[in-house]
Image (cartoon, rainbow, N blue to C red):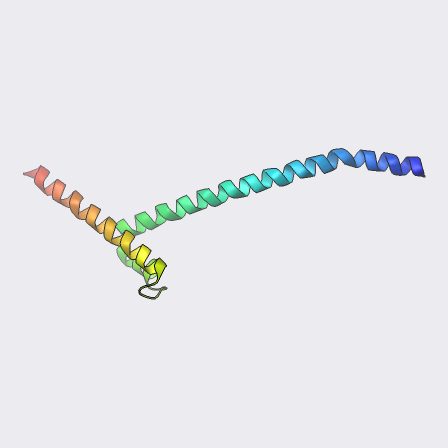
Length: 97
């Protein structure tokens, strides 16, 4: 019985090592996924702000109170995108002449 218990314990060592490796790998993958998700969210915000300002306002400005940090941050992004768009329009108009 003792020998059987020893063999059972020894057989489980590789599984325990692999489980530890898997946990580390999963943690790494979760961190990378979070970074990619944040980057994708920023890109979506930029596209919505530049192409669909009404949808951007509905999704990112209306849910927050005026003066809150998120509201101010989102409003600043919308203003920056508008300024960039206006500058591009001016460049296009002057390029035509």
